[in-house]
Length: 498
Image 1 (cartoon, rainbow, N blue to C red):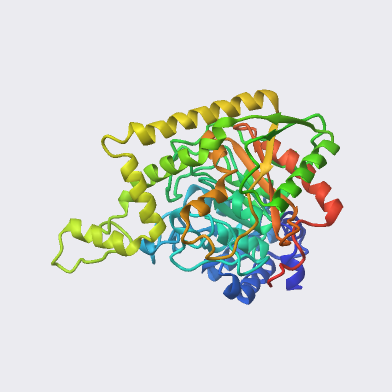
Image 2: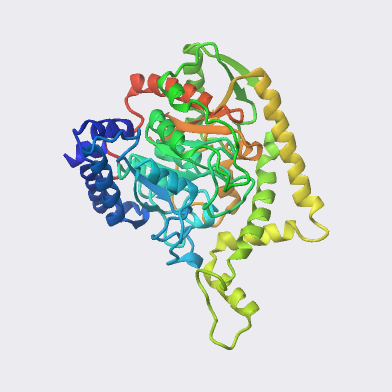
């Protein structure tokens, strides 16, 4: 029974709870048992809130027994990236500097999940402060990819993607600053969506780079992602960057997927040196599939995209150096050296030395340098000009096409430790995803097969204009349906390493 429950989609699970075929408690217990059985190997979770999850599930069952109408995801379990504040349970952001911190309030996204009766199983592992592409930068150890536990599950949201791939949860939440929802989805064979910037509230989401960070849905199917997107999106007056506009009809689009008559752009810059042969092979097959489904394929040339990686690694560290200044050891979290013999400045220095990991320190140093007197215009200012060029190129591209497609990542999942001592090689994992964050557009990654050389998942990225997130789901659902018909469900019944 447990095995059958954990293989259900979120939509199927919600329907069976609503009909009384399953109880929310049964569903929650099945997923908690799965976590207990396999997470020692995967290490997707940093904190499992067993009692809290069961209490939420019992409340859902009580509502159904009283005849109250249940929402479309009521009783469905979810794994929450440990970057969103959760009242009463830890939020660490994968860092020692917040080890043991219990927030006194819920993030807006957390509150919306609870209001929708989604059952939060616990908090997932991540690169410290969302800085990384492999979840190796977590202060609490790396997460393994359920397809091959010796390989990375992507980052920074590798815990959420691994929980999905290992059937520990049918839904998850990630955040995407330079690709941290889409890249993990690609390498674990799952679906991940970066909504339009500002479409999902950032209130209560611990900030890394405020002009880039965006929370979003992760799932095993396009429809499940759409159902979760609809729950978490919408204007929030507590977030000054929140978009005050209706949520696009993402669920309707996911239920009516089609590409007939759509113009689909293929960008020249998203291939070439550094791309794995099997990734390009599967991408080219996906383009042929889209053409066969009735789409018009349009070649695009966006030369500024070649500068996106450089611009990102000036803008993001600059904003992180400012945002992380609040972690000073004086207000909350870790405090080191407060023995009566050190000044406040010394306590801050000792705390940051002990609390931050190597990658966080690297980015703080990069950002502080880029913002320093005499260098601001040469580095941060120039990067912002490049950002404007990229946004303008997207605008011109979307005058010619309805969506853009590309590989999500240049390679499949690489071995844990392979790029640990080579930051530049690590940063290249986000080559295809970063331009979208700089422009603020919406993007999705979904599975498009396995690379023949290593039998690991490959992701197809779909990019849409800002506030046209429904196009992602319309195209994604059509592609998913075609692939399921061709070679089965994007996820194996059992992940190979489990």
